[in-house]
Length: 265
Image: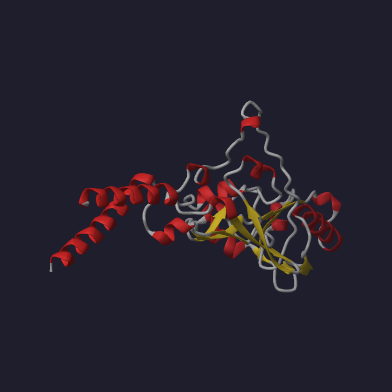
């Protein structure tokens, strides 16, 4: 009778292990299906030009034949600056205020809300030629976002991140944050994105190779990447079948011992 009872307990532990463990399909990035195994993967760049929003930080540099003329536009001597790149951009960059404006020397308030980097460059070049320089100065203006800043929360390295590139995929963003934990729900990664009309939530499945074709595969500045936990984490039994089996046997053994002790009283 007792042997039969132990057999039932072991069978229950086995069923529990196989029903609660996390499948490798849920923890593997960008999986290909059978029809695509022999295909060449081409990441489609569906990223549209980013349009500047309030709170963005811009790096603007002006060059000319006579560098002394543009000194006020480039106030920091980068060659002698000991601060980090992020600190340099913070103190020397142009922050877009709540009205969508930046303050540029001699030009004053310049509205850049909704403009692309190229459109801002062309606008500033035109204003400088109109109000300050002559064509003979051969001015050269560069406008760049001061890195792609984003935030990660949940089953991923938590915090504010920055990558100094013009384009950043969500895979790069996840890797930069330390990756998704074994308990992270990779099939339903949320991207909370800022728009002029407010925030919107988008979902992307990072276990599917088709994620590379998503319009959200490239992140944007101020994105929030949220990775929720799988149900297995709440159970606290482990991630692999062996771990769960061992936990189940331990729990059931404890219950059995307790029952036997009380039956002898």
